[in-house]
Length: 328
Image (cartoon, rainbow, N blue to C red):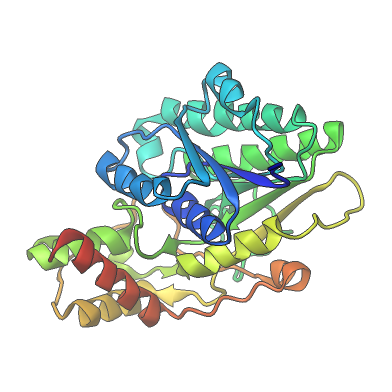
């Protein structure tokens, strides 16, 4: 039987990629996934995510580094791919300070290779790609608007994500490829990334270890639950691209539109765990920002996106998953 529509998801063993693929497979879609399964955080967690996906016959996986364009092109060459959800990247703000070349390879070379894939894929309808709220730098004006200047990143990670947006605009202009960038705001939830604060705090609090609170807790984060993020991604992927004046390239904030104080976040986490944290206050870390706050007017207007999960509900679901997965 001919496949009318199939998705390619990069970073499919990652946090967001895994959840997007899971929902698409539940909808009886065909999903091709690639990931390099690097050891930035526990490969075991990535393999466990893949086990969940591999149980579905409509899923096919290849271990591919996006910087290796030959292997990437070989995998996709005979696939009936109509839509791409490009989520693979070297993540982490602080890691980029000590490991800049990893970001150049994954986030710059890898993104160009994906744009080239899209350019030569004759039946491609749309490619979505991951940007980041970190591109707004150290802005204190809230909320962040897509039209705000975002040309003063304060980490290499943020600089690569802004570069991805610029390259995508160029490819949309030159080759008329429908491209949409998504500026994610502090995504959290089950199967999440162990390097994220909510995950590492949970591990240390349960172990009775000290947690480090940067900027003495004086930070705001637009925590966005993973199910809301997946809903936003699929709203865009499963509709026709928005008609635009000029190149077919758009960028959207995708967040909860409700920044929370780090202190409030930590208090809720303590309550859900039933354990008080042993805290150590520290100054702001290099590359970090004091505030993230998404204005989601554009994505709400164009695609009807509206997050529905509050922080307590989201952390409760994460803690439930964490205890089950780690047997705590």
